[in-house]
Length: 445
Image (cartoon, helix red, strand yellow):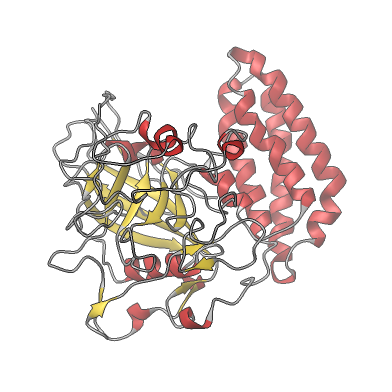
């Protein structure tokens, strides 16, 4: 089980930025010498000192932008620190999403759930265990111990699904991972019994932690159903660093000029199943220590960004070519076995298509790129902070335009307290490095 991470925190000051949202080079979510940073996860507990936090609201202007009604609803209302220019990432005439899509059901916003549903598996039995355990989150929104009645119903449903579907779940495990998967199922069953005791003891405060533990077991079982990497990356990208699976990183950030928050470790899960080129590029840069010592270069309440190296280059210069290494736009969508490359979903005419890794969670991680060059991403990354009630999955204007390749799964709330000038002390891969194919960092130079 992953260790709990925390942050040394006192009185948070609001994130700030004097820069425009886009650069003169039209790099969405990036500006010259201002790029996004990643976080790293550590296998050991990291403690955060919390004193008193103050959240301050910010008002922001939107100017010099031709914008559709759908975009206005999705990104204008309540958006912090957006400074629109004629080079806004939506361009002058963004396509208007279908209204039926805009009013679709509430999006999944939990990063763990998003990652579970993004796995390339088709096993209804384990999903029927997963869903009621996730529903416990909604049950806990009921005040007091009355919530425990709903939790007990959720638990009964999950237990029944596990009992009835266990043979189908076991048969769905990859042969090479079956022993591990069966062990996790045993831990899941034991954990459900422990949660039942917690409910009977009316210990409401202990429910959330046990729920998280159970869902980690479920996620582990589901990962054990994936047998190898499920598809071939297009030939033109096969020699690039590729993450053929998932990896977890810890990003430690040193916070400056904040008497409350001194440093924080963020855990990030990178999803190479759905973005092998994008995630592989990032892991390769992490192993080169590219981001270590780099500052947070944008923090405006809407995104946090880093990745722009010192000097005239706007990305990573590959020592072997002495040129900027760029990667293609990479978008995996529901119903497809291989990502789309080199084009936005809008350009492909796939306006209603749902992405496998949507911009739903606080701390969604994606690549910044030149607005008008789909294949211009290099090293600049950003984390989305705005919640998505008004921009649900496949209606968020960012979905299908920028390559998501991971989510912050621990301490994501502290991203909002980062500001320009805070320093990424280190990013470290703590698991999944064996899934990186073609690592360039091992090559001399």
